[in-house]
Amino acid sequence: MITTDQQRWDTLGSGGHPVVKTPHIDMLAARGTVCTNAFCVSPLCVPSRTSLFAGDYVHRTGAVDNEHASYWTSVDDTLLGPLRAIGYRLALIGKNHAFHPEQARPDFDIWEEYAHWGKVAGTNVEAFPDVKAFRMEETRFPGIAADDGLMEGLIEGPDPFPPEACVTHRIVDDAIDFIDRQGDDPFFLYLSFPDPHFPNIVCEPYHSMYDPATFPPLPGADIDWEGHPFAHYVQSQTYDFPDYMTADIQRLLATYYGQITFIDTELGRFFDRLRAVGLWDQSLITFTSDHGDFGGQFGHVGKTKAFYEPLIRIPLVLALPGEDRPQRLEASISNIDIMPTILDHCGLAPSRPPQGRSFLAALTGGPDVHRDEIIVECGRPVQPPPPMAPDAFQAYQSERLKQDGLFWFIDYTVNGRAAMIRRDGWKYAWYVGDRDELYDLTHDPLELHNLSDAPEHREQREALRNRLLEWLLTEPVRRP
Image (cartoon, rainbow, N blue to C red; front, side, top):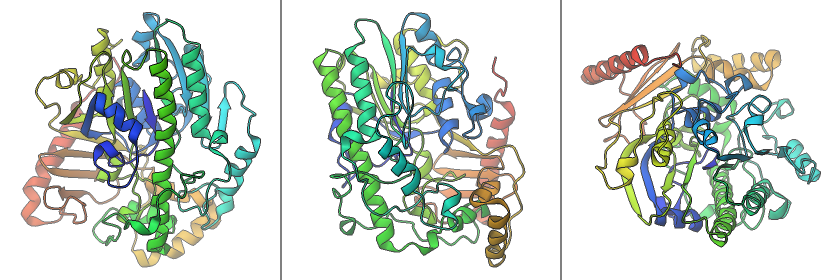
């Protein structure tokens, strides 16, 4: 299972992107299935990843934020439990954000964990201290109160180290070493890259690979926040996005694309080693991401408590062993469906019934259908502060910065439960303590025109709201 962090669904060559070069992931896609309508269950890292392994929605896992309390403390009730029970070796190499680093680590045979600044657990943790120091000290967001912590945003210049010293390359080194020492035992490898998440910085030749001047910013960068959730406005202002020039957005995208191609290049090394040892055609290989990224759309960089398409749609490529079945699957897939699909292919039953549903039949020649609705959740069950008029916000922000530091804004962007339903070409989103949203995806694919207050769409809004409420109140919230 190969994962990236915060990669937009539309940034693969095999997905039709006109700029980003991903020849090795495209080669995997040419062997298997590209799922063109795949969605995460949360636009936040840990909630999405824990749901990916559990096959359950966020309200059932209880993982509502990125704190350690949201991590799995054991593999037993996840995808990995049935595999371990029949003798699979388990390896975690790369970014974790799913399993508790102390409590679940004994369940793994190999644990080589990385963060964005370097290796944090496993072998050779102290290697490349200069890389770690640079990432910790020099890649802070150059905005308000930068000394208080890391923020997503533009970083000028390339990573000053050669590829061999960078995290993306070192993760694949560890993965190749694992493959070389594996022998004949069956295994599950969670190969997880921290990029293209912030800090958006990449070494040469990738930093210069894409000329920012040759492609425009993504559509939908300009948005009128009147009539949209106040929490989104708060994060846009806090990230200083209104001060971004077009050239800043283009440079940020060029770096983001370079990070993706760096990952693809290193995956090429890994795929070559799988071929060399005879595992390329024998392995079930998935490639996906935990959630997407704004990339300058909606007045944002990074992510927030929102349900716009760039955040909730994810890349998903799945290649079954022993098959050469290149195809595009248009069915709507949730990332909680990956867990039961893998176990279904292996002939194994989950340790308890998941909320995800296997789409193996669609992968192997069945009808190109799966889900008729997509549900996404986000936010802590804590009341956020009330919205306010934009002309009062600047003074409020200054006072909160003085009192609470840079991350005061999470009171709005993390606190407050929110849920979304996507069905029949429409999307409805509901937020505790904030205004709701309704979008006609057929006529407004960029989701710029919130129709929740439009009288002519009241019936559509009420139908989706009632269905979302029914779902929230009838889906089990306790794990059996």
